[in-house]
Length: 202
Image (tube, rainbow, N blue to C red):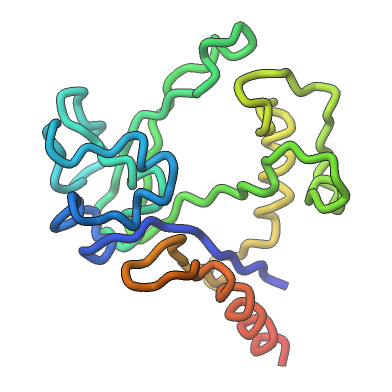
């Protein structure tokens, strides 16, 4: 059976179309996402107004952080960015080079956060499923909250995405915060995905 996914996106006032918001200064909802709150710049730096190709933007142009949070999933453009590993300050990760990440039009950047969270409780997916997670090869680095070993990450991702099937799996986007709505929409997605699964099984 195909696996369906819910993917978090930041709130956007222009349809997640690959452009920055029409009025980014007034978009407070996207600040709920920590990475965006820490990195966004409304006035002080020049921002690109669109991503029209997979050519990496130069350092003198500010790439809005919503790019890394699937903030362009309705864009008709190919988009590109250079990602730097957050742990390159550590001797065990110094060898990791900056990586170009290219997204095709109408696509998400999906990260299974709960699966990559280091958690030894029985509620952890790595305890409940055979992801081949090996705690013994993990190094203590940064906050030490996340799975950082490349072998463990590869095994988790392969297990997680194994049943994601092109043209069958359904993606439901949700926003952690939406203007004028006080509750998160995440709790709505489980019911939506269950209804989809039930319809396909019928």
